[in-house]
Image (cartoon, rainbow, N blue to C red; front, side, top):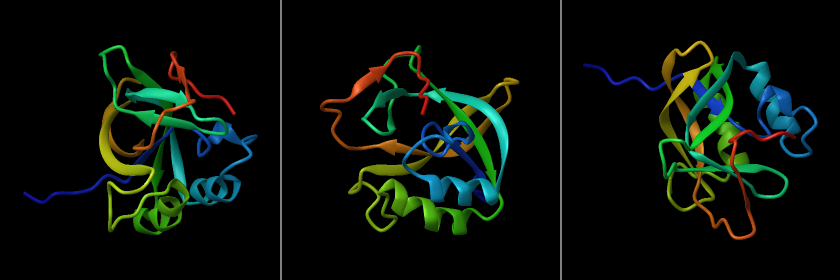
Length: 139
């Protein structure tokens, strides 16, 4: 059986379509949305924190821990990740050494369709970050 990697990316912060007013990620957001198609709102297990100018997603601690975002279907994933990985501080040669790790996680679209998507999971300290209890970040 062949293993395939998803063409989907779950975004929950400055890369979301609705984050047009965010100060960070404008260039990356425009490039991402130029090379993808939005599948709309989605959610996944996790906890969201406000790190100041952007949110960070970490692993869930309870079944009620949910992060809301958007799923994008990427036209050319390797090209897009060559742009997004440096923006997110992810180094493919040292996956646990940066601020984020890119992982495949299950997500659920608004129509309850489940799929696997790439997501950037934060590895850094949460000192000074505020927990966003409802799992929704707004720019």
